[in-house]
Image (cartoon, rainbow, N blue to C red; front, side, top):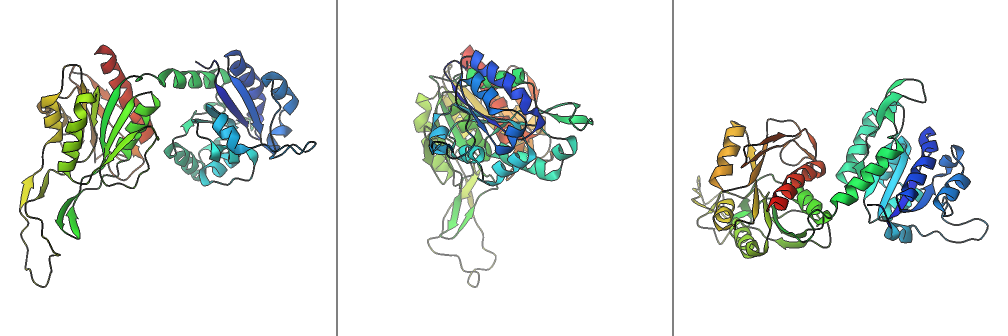
Length: 402
């Protein structure tokens, strides 16, 4: 999986830097081309000569080479890399990455990198669980970085706890697993809806909900990363498209979303209906702003919006996979399974507003997946990016069976 891959190995100033000799050797042995970038403090723990010998490339530490004046372009490095691995990642470097403090070659390259980033923290247990470190790691996850969790054991302080950099073999495995899964959906077309819909009352007021679109956008990014052709039908959100290869269609109302989905449906191998679609719209939208002074207790008549999930379920072919979402507040499991059957879905992703960290306007989610095979897959509270990986894992299995 790593043969021919361009890997930047960023080494920071921690005692675990000694493991990077083994990590470099394993990456090269796996067929990767490795460019080492060291922070100035990292050179206090392991010599650049060792890493240069193992990688077959001069180690980069500064913006220019002192004896020749050659400029080391962080932009070119960011474009060259297929993956950026920062190991060990100290609390200081994690903080700089999270907050864009570009005061050394490594962090500047990180900020320029287009490739996936893998971060292997290493520090003492009290630093690891400090609120600032926890916050910074959460920020890095929200940016799409992959955190390779540290192991527990005896630390340099001789305390016992979580903070040991993961072993080189496991870091290499994480990279191999990533690239192995990158093309799981190659040749497949996935249609995804995301965000809310907005239904006008008058020219300045509307009916909507609290959906941010983050879960749907995370799913679109994950499907694209795995090689799928992705069509993303998005309600009014401020999110950037996760990847330039994604075909994004912006809509406002439920009717517009329905029409966009039904037009794209024949070409899709799978449909993920993640949007929070308004069930109703205003029957008679006012042409002018409704004045409070002129209208006492106005009555707004509502009319049903098209049921997109039902329409997809009725029109789907036998070789198409459809996935729904159910945000519940009570009788969660029963309601979700009822929707699974009514809408002719292959599986449904249920979350509950009663679960801390789940729902709208947050970076995390906690879901349970119910399948048409009678399976129930319970997940833990994790970042929406990680939840997207779990959901797409199930989708990939369904598509492989089709």
